[in-house]
Image (cartoon, rainbow, N blue to C red; front, side):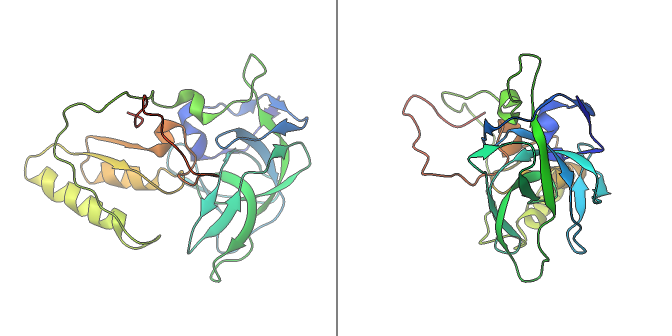
Length: 232
């Protein structure tokens, strides 16, 4: 059992406590697996962790942190992947504010090197199985039913104003007497955008994190079964 100092918001579907059972032996790694790590280095420009409450906390060398294995492809951020296996002593990197962890292979010129972390082990449940945020994901839906009108806001890259535009739409619609639900469909796990939508009047919010995905970067082309549809 390991006592963690900070828990990344990417783990929020599981409602983890600070006491986490871990398996230190070498295990196959999957996107969404909860990993407990010790912080090894600092980063003057990217050293904050978003907690499940949405609050930001500084990450310091020596901190024991619970995060989630995942991939990232950010034009103005970090690029990283999930390793094939994970064991105690492996060195990985903090890829985003939400606590997504992987092997960093590059970053934008405005950033310093990603914070390096040492793996303590993969979190396990009472049945000794690795905990994965997909275990608490929304169930798959065969089809989508009748819905309210949809407005989709899309952009070409990170920091292009997508969330700003979405929150302005939410606020104006709410002030005009409409009930608005909002969702974040792509990116990397972090509560900041959905909390921002709620602050502007959204009565319900969700993202791919609620579906058990640490990011919308996949390792290979995803072919959807004709019998299965989007997550609800």
